[in-house]
Image 1 (cartoon, rainbow, N blue to C red):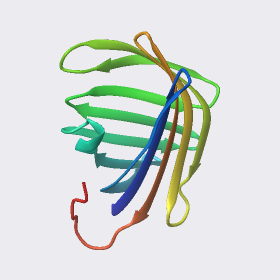
Image 2: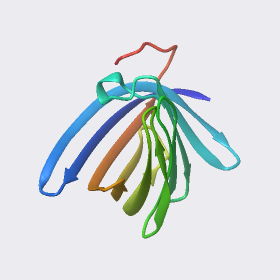
Image 3: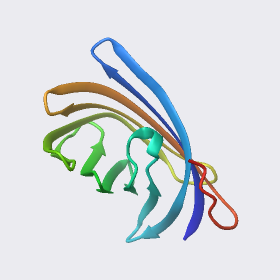
Length: 146
């Protein structure tokens, strides 16, 4: 198990309107289990996800992102495939559909990188999203940055 520092950049397009990029840095852990790489971190309060933990499970060019806590969701990003699921908040449950157009993963070396581009339907809202995540090994203990 390794302590890591993550840099996360997210851009979202709703119709012709661009939101972001929103960028933040946080810390987490990286480990291997059953020939998969797992990354776990707490979401940033600035992103509206205070009290939410995220786990990314990486295998080949497939990324499964699971959120737990105040928000619950499970999203699978596999290029050219449609994923259907639910997005659960304390207030309601919404249908979630993901269609990944890019899943580019490099977990060899330091830093590692995960780039995702995908269309998402969340309820009645359709967006195009870009998520760029890089991580590097961090020596020592944790010091919260956000």
